[in-house]
Image (cartoon, rainbow, N blue to C red; front, top):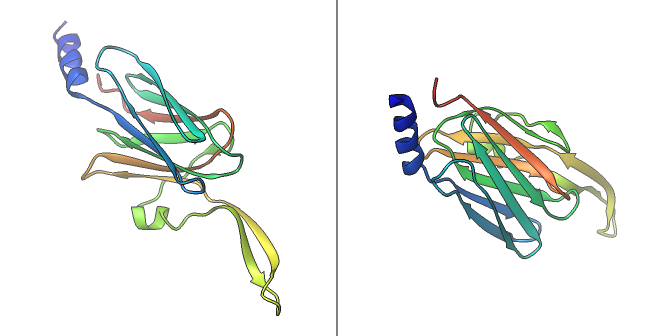
Amino acid sequence: MKKAIAWRRKRRLLAIVAAAVSLALASALVLSQTTHGEHVSTTTTKSTSLSASFAASAATYVTNSAPNSSEWLIVQSISSPLSVSTNNTGAVPEYTNLAALNQTKIGIYCVSVDQSGSCAEFKQYLQTGWFWDSSDKILYIHYVGGRDVKISVSTQNVHD
């Protein structure tokens, strides 16, 4: 009973703020979690949408954006995730710092220019990743966008 009361108090104090930023479309949106039990909410701005659901040891975010676009999900997280995955690319690798994560590329880039100045060769990059900032308690996820992309974040159970 005491654990349940303590959990409810922690839950009341916990406000999860999520922002998904579409670099390609320069659109952003914010999602806030209410403090009572599991919650599902959707916020839409421009052409990217986000919905989320939360449980004791996991969070799931579903986004909609342009196919194969470079997308960022930025959420407040009180503990480091055990794993992050998406339904379109699978397991998302962890990075040791934000600067390294910020170097990842998603999309098609020109890698060679001919004498006329036109692109001679393109290359597709799908460099996903995540980093948890322990100082600010923020989780950064760089992922490949598309229709109904499900992002799963597993964390340690707070009850443990």
